[in-house]
Image (tube, rainbow, N blue to C red; front, side, top):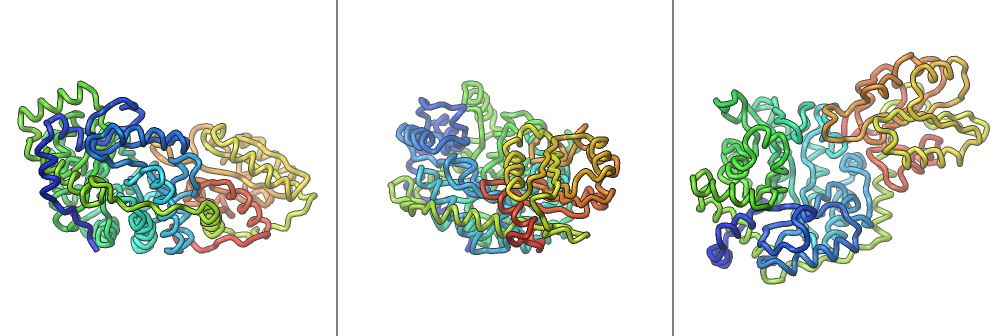
Length: 527
């Protein structure tokens, strides 16, 4: 059932009592690291970055105690709470959850995230990601997505979303009208979603529509343009990002898709928005053209002065500001934040949480390709194994490949590990048949600024010299980039995807490669 914000007289009275500056505060969600512990403004929401659980609890309690109007306490629980609440249960990724093909498990992971974060006072998350992993080289989608197929994505994302919302956590589907259709990064520039109207309605449009129909409470537009439904900006000769597009937010999202929940911008400092238009104009136009709340605003004297100037010139009307604040405060009344009746969060079960995380890993590690039927590989204590690491910024993942070395050492006494060895060393070793088996950790981790999520620079040259075709059995493992096999279509004959890494991942991976446990061979999340 579609979610609707119910405007209330009580909320209207609160909004009428606020000054213009307090109204601005109410439509903003800054970050706690920038604002600090001593501000007393009536911020509508506050985002807390990854912090140890005990410290987070203190920060949230202190912030809430200073708020005139109860705030939304926000995090980014894209795959459980463990990446944001340090000490909570870690899950590998949304694509890992999706690859299990279990709606029940996806729902449970959402419920666990809601409980573990809710215990600290969180009531809103900027997740789940609803983007389709259409372009294998996308630098920002990848394993954050549930996959490429709209039907499967809706099934898994909706289950996760409902797990969140059924347990008191407002969910946000993102990034409308759909990222993942190119290699430009909205952190840096304004990507263009190139789909026709028919293609969009059958792909990302269907995903957003179905999730809206399933009760999504909030949507985050990306700084992404959609020319098929918009008008060109004559001043630039380009199409505007959805964040400031009335055609996309009002006509398409509110109108055609019938969404009546909260619309929150992505971070307003991202290049896809403020590289397109002046920062303060962008904030004003986002509110005027459909957004309810601005994310990661810099709440300093400059911001207030510039926004008040736009109120004076009419770029941002006081009527719009009050309407946005009314929707936010009404939602707080509706959820019970204003009178303390917000549902009590059910206590989480740490033992079951860990079991669920292990279940996701066990069901999601996938043999994506095995042309030579190498898996399961018959390992012995005398098998000469070489573990090769070909990963961008390999120094960042020392803990990962040290775990691989430790796990391999449980199965063989003849183990060597090379990090970024170069193609010449690999060529000689394969020609000399120095090893019986090579396991190669390969790929890049999503990181904005990469432009494409591929091997690059000198690290990529490890794939030269033809060493993968010289007779030694080679099993590639992609830990983070689930589409490595598409770029290396012929040179990689066997590859396993883990879709992320948590404590049990490497143990289950190595046991699966050597036949001690089964590995998934069905590609639910991608083709």
